[in-house]
Image (cartoon, rainbow, N blue to C red; front, side, top):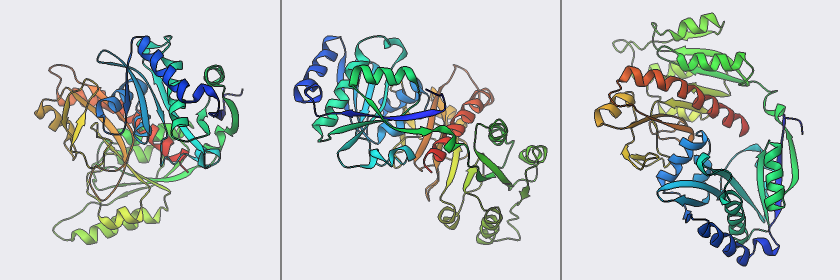
Length: 379
């Protein structure tokens, strides 16, 4: 199959294999293989942070939208299979995936230590049986782009190809983006580089900064990107008037997407309402639950959710063993919007703020690129 193709697979759940006896058999076999079994609904934060640590940061919010069967070996997570996710907006779910009687399977993963064991096929069977138990007649396994994975699902689930997608459909259109940045612009540069390399289907229409000394301005000049410098003189300009000028500067560029890449100014309610397609990068590992003020890490430790402009410093003062990066949609509540991609970063003993930031920047670049592509896939 061409590497540029994605397929949706469908599994008929009406046979005995996925009935009540088949589900019970799969559960018994997982236990017989030496694993403990848990059924996880949203709320088991350590499980979701393990997904981000083990598999790259894009799956936890998808698993959070559904239910999961999890296999554990002692205190270690071995693998998981999510089923019956609701509310996901990926464009490949708008066909067969939107039909009555079709349940969504995935994400699905086995930790590196346990790959090659029996746990993967057993988790697959258990999750598909759980979809049947929930009343679905078919399961959709979406967006598979690997021949080996297709063969795997054919072998262990009897899956067949139901829908095909050319990846170029998400690359051919270029979306207009406006970047807001207040500082060095390292994340801005990573987006510029991604656009130049053809990895991100964006046209950067403008940079807006509130800091005339921001190095992001030099990056914009080097890339021939129009830039607007809009500092706020608090002595002469009221906050509502400045916010109106900021909105107008963004509005003139007619963006499809706004990216907050180190933007150090709280946006007013009117901005959030006018530009709902806005993604922020934040230098902390934020909880999936928007209202939560605590975040749990892969080792089970927890800290406050470090929101605001000094997240790394706050983590150090608190004594956290972890930092991280999160890309999320903006809402009226600061650093609490729906998470698109996040990734934890384990801290080294005695590590200072500058060292953490140096290690964090590449992670932020990966997280932001993943969030942009997720946004594109949701168009």
